[in-house]
Length: 300
Image 1 (tube, rainbow, N blue to C red):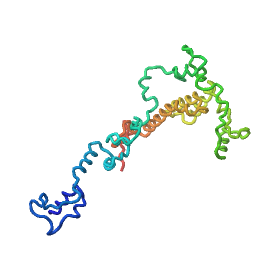
Image 2: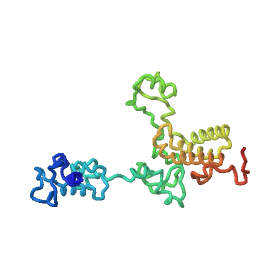
Image 3: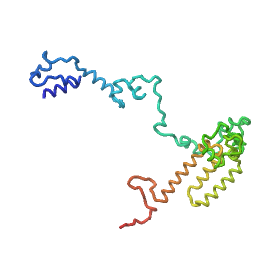
Image 4: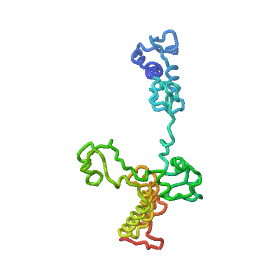
């Protein structure tokens, strides 16, 4: 028992003292066994206060990832460096953006309440950043005509991107054959690396938008006339045609993704109504009846 007490006392300082502790008959006895003059003196006195102070400083309610790294003064990230005042990072700590915690904002998430009671301008919103400053010819403030033919020239060239980009080239033969199969590449062209197609470099006119949209509506009415979300799909295609997605796919997708999002939400609502899901789903009531007065079938 006395040996265990001695080892537990010396564990606070240096663990190696337990190996050199006297055992058996040579063990000190009496009241002054440990505190008297005859107590064994080690070469390395215990450093319990210093070791405990390090652990107390490291675990001071700051919830760091590693205590040993703090004791060695090696921060594993800049946030521990700032919390413990180690100052190992030369350029300080860059604050994390809110998107790292909440995710990227949905389209126009902040402007929904702002645009609730305001009229919507089609096909482009009238703003000085879009209409007036990009048009270098007419900078008058009284441009009342906001039709497609009057506004589209400010955003896109009227004749389209006629000159092909000669920097584009095919890195392999299968890419060239695939482009030729889809009508985006012509073998008769002198510059074999250029992508030439008149349809890709022509801006949609008002008649082109009407004709292509009418063909799309007829196709939808033939394929699935009872689709509850077909009007949202029509609006999405109309938006893509307005922004000439065939020649400018990146900007048109950014402008029209809101219709695609509404279309996918509508398809999910349609699926819930067809299969009888609850409006508010939970773990217990995952599936409901087809309608309110539906009978409860008793299965054997």
